[in-house]
Image (tube, helix red, strand yellow):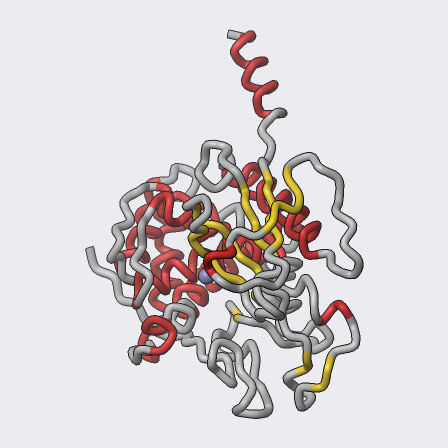
Length: 337
Ligand SMILES: [Zn+2]
């Protein structure tokens, strides 16, 4: 009756994150994880001269929490209000973000580095702004959500870390990262830039990003072979099944082949129009949380899960499922049941 309804409304108001931010203070040994406790839920902003990393992590985890809760009805990474842990200042200008197991508390936690302290496009000239040195990765909402999403994916599908299952893990993280950015900016699929981490490499260099959904393989290119990101001088992502990378770098291409499903998601989102998180994103979330995704899931099998998820949803049904099928065909995947 009415009293139950009122109670659930009250509870909804009290669903809130439980953030805990640690600071590695530039240490990079695994045994130093998680670092020192820097800020926990409800505590005021930290005042560290010139370094906004702790506060950026705290703020972005709140936006990430709200995105997951408001759009997908999800309460934190584990779906049960568990803690949102972030670790910042990992290593000395470690130009990356990662998802790691902390030995100290045996939890999977996002770990953020700070980006470069020099400009790879300008013969490594030192950057004289803090902007280039701090907050590059942890200040990027889509990167924060990308790392968090690895934990959510693992809750539902224990995908293997290499080859196609590993690339799907990267793909899911990119999809929810890019949607969080679009949601925060209230951008339609046509307004969005569909770039991951455009503030991460060197913020001053406009037009460079870590990955591109629209044209995988074109996000960045260094002008010297000695400079690289993850060992590549040029964005190595693939956009078509026929171009799939099969050599052993990057755990058999987990960040390279994720371009193929990324492109399919972008094509579908544009076919359906409006906001990515209202249509394509809901289909992807249903497919993942069906708990039917196996640890050795291939691109083909994942594609079939998404088509099935669209078909089963009364709000979408066959017309939308056909569009999902079309998007996968456009990146070269032929599906048969
Ligand atoms: Zn990742």
